[in-house]
Amino acid sequence: MFKKLKNSLFLSKTNVIGSYLWFVGTAFFIAVIYMSTNGFTSDPCYGVGCPEHTFLLPMLASFGVGFGFFGITILTGIMRVLLKAKKWTPPFNISSWAVGFITFLITLVFGAYGIGSLRKASLMWNANYTGEELFNAVNEHRGLVGAQEVVIGEGLCDNLVSRWQAVKDEKQHEGFEEWIEKEGIQTNYGYYQVVELYIISQTPEDAIDFWIGSPGHKIQLENPVWTDGCAYAGEGYGVVIMGYK
Image 1 (tube, rainbow, N blue to C red):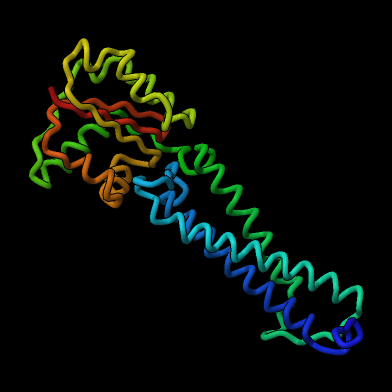
Image 2: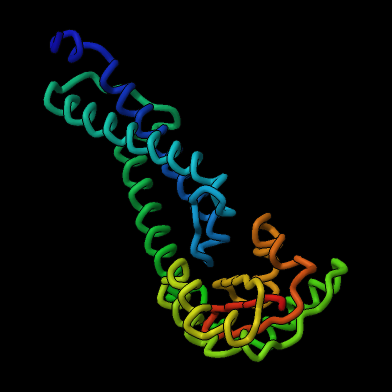
C-alpha cells in the first residue's frame, strides 16, 4: 500500500487540495466572526435568542471544515515527506506550503487585530463621544421611526457608570438584574420595566447603525413604550438604559 501511495499522485493532490480547502474554511470563519462582531467592534452573543445566533451554525461549520482540512493537510504532508511520494504540480503552481503559510499569516493578523479591536486596542483609540451624544442619537432615531423621545430619568442615571464599567471590563452579560435591584431602579424609582443596550463603537451613529441592523436590538431601540432613559459613554464604550413607570 505504501509503495502504491509513493508511486501515485494521491498524497500530493490530497495535500494541496486539502490546504486550499483549509484556507477557504479559515477565511470563511474569519468573515463570519467579522460580520457577527460588526467589524470587531462589539462583543457578540451567539446563544438562542441573541441577535448573533444566526451566525452560530456558519461559524461552527466553517471552523469544522477548516480544522478538518488542516488535519488532512498536515497528515498527507508528513506522509509525502516520509514516503518521498511523487510531486503534483498544483494550479497556478501554488504549493500547499505556500497556502499553509498564507493561512497561518492571515489567522495571526486577523486574530491579533480582532482581539485588539474587541479590547479597544486598535479600533477604539479615537472614539471619544459622550453619553449625551449617544442619548441624542437614540432620540433622533426614535423620532425618525415615530417613537416618542425618551427623557432623562434620574433613577436610570443613578450610578450608570457602574454598568459602563462592566461593559468596558467585558462583563456586560453579567449582573444587569442585580444592578437594577442594587440601585433601586424599580423599588425606589418605580420603573416597571427596564432595558439595556450597550455597544463598542467609534461614533454614536455607528452604534445606532449596529442596533438597527440587529432585530433584537432594533425592537428595544424603537420600542414606543419607553418614556425615560439615560446613557453613559467613554473610550468607545456606550450604555443606554430605557424604561417606563
